[in-house]
Length: 156
Image (tube, rainbow, N blue to C red; front, side, top):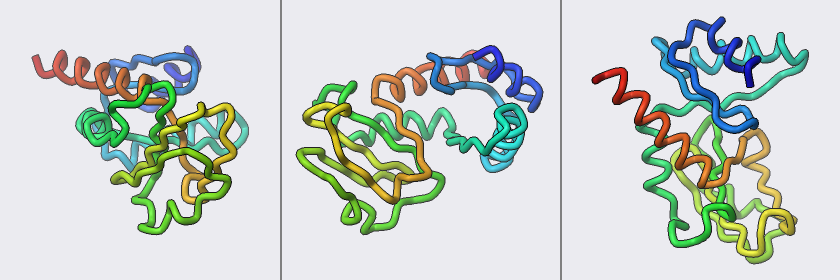
């Protein structure tokens, strides 16, 4: 994660904090989300030698994702948010294959999935989520908390 911090620093981001070793990072950037995404993807591609897709969300967007979770009463370790670059098509869930007992729900630029029998046993594929990245709700909630605290500290 020190490489990711260095990449963010080189992009000009401030107050950088990584969370668990799966590419989650919270920081302050004085640029639009699209510019943040491009800056990170360009630097990550140079670092990794291959394209690396990035999902960017503001503190407010992360809070809204946690609030909009339609599976709040389910175990957060069995519920994921799949982050997408754009709003999913209205029929995105009808294209899902291998669905067993999973519950799915469209979000703003996300797809929520509750894996009733656990993620490891699922055969679910969602074509609309192919270019997205998934995080369980424990991670999403923690990132939302970190981002809110960071924003409050910077304003305070």
